[in-house]
Length: 154
Image (cartoon, rainbow, N blue to C red; front, side, top):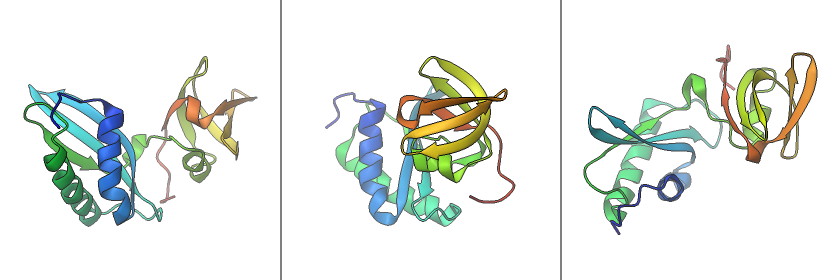
């Protein structure tokens, strides 16, 4: 299949197909260059919302590696890396915001750019407390990351 595709949505679909049956959700795929080396970074979370372990990352990586090798979606040499969401967890779905209620998120899109606590979630709508004012955005229309690390696993 190697048609020099490095489109993130294609890579995300390939990773998703490989790891979702194992109980993982692909949160984000990035293609990075580090010292001239191409890296495909995949951030995953467990569908059961338990903490991601090293064993989980190994299992997900092996499954995705086989699929990436079979489909060969990236031109040239690259390294496939898997990470847990970490402190800058991408928030891409309403349920991600709901899980992090009360914590600060960094939000960009729909004419907004702010960092504020997540106040409420209703359907796809997420409300933030921005300097005492409610600002509501569509979860699917913005880019957001967790801006503070929770004191316990959520």
